[in-house]
Length: 310
Image (cartoon, rainbow, N blue to C red; front, side, top):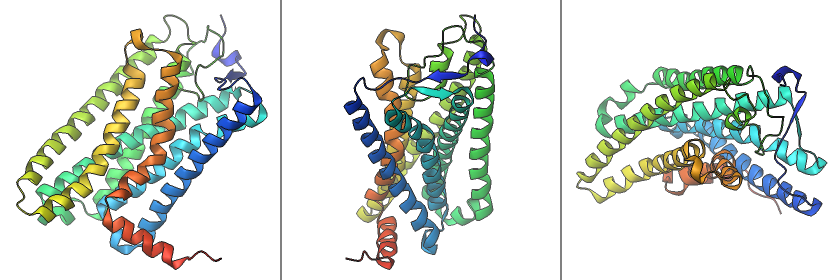
């Protein structure tokens, strides 16, 4: 029986067996990583520089972009480095750090998405009291609560996971360190403590999900009663991107961790993890900017201040 403290490093999943395919995976990860940096960086810069966007909705969107950058910066650089160096190694401390920060950014993002649904609910149902109910101090407190909750959640899970004795070797069946994959290496009965923490987190996530669903059911019922076609368009333009991001985030992350064992396979686990950990942080800026005329106008204004020189 190997104690977790005696394991100097873990072995991540080898995505390709030949050097050419390894370099191809490096280029793929690099392209997605740069797209995420560009998209989220533009959203952060645009919102920060345009005072017209200093509203609760865009303040939360700015926080979401920062969390997306943090999440993809936690998972992608290591497999990129391993592909270049033709290795699978990640140190024990590096693996624990990766688990903490990924769980932190993921948890904080989910709590923030719940907060953003409350923001849309207040905007539709209490527009005259919007500035009062979601003043600058309230927004800062809500965002800070999302970040702090994510940090606490990540700390509890990381500390508990890496205190378990590992009896099944050190090969992680994933391209980054993920708690479910670490649990597979633990002793047959020792992982039950972490499973209870996961159950509590799942229950909390389910409560947040119910809150989001109920909020949007009420929102869409109210929007459909608006007689103006322009009112419909404006309401859907601000609500649909958030609902799209929530749907993609919840379906991929929940299915990755809660799918029946009968349909589980290493390739399916890899695809699902790739979707919610790499693809989503890259496409979120695109989803939020497609139908948002204010954001597109502010982005065009920002880009016009720095014209490309031939």
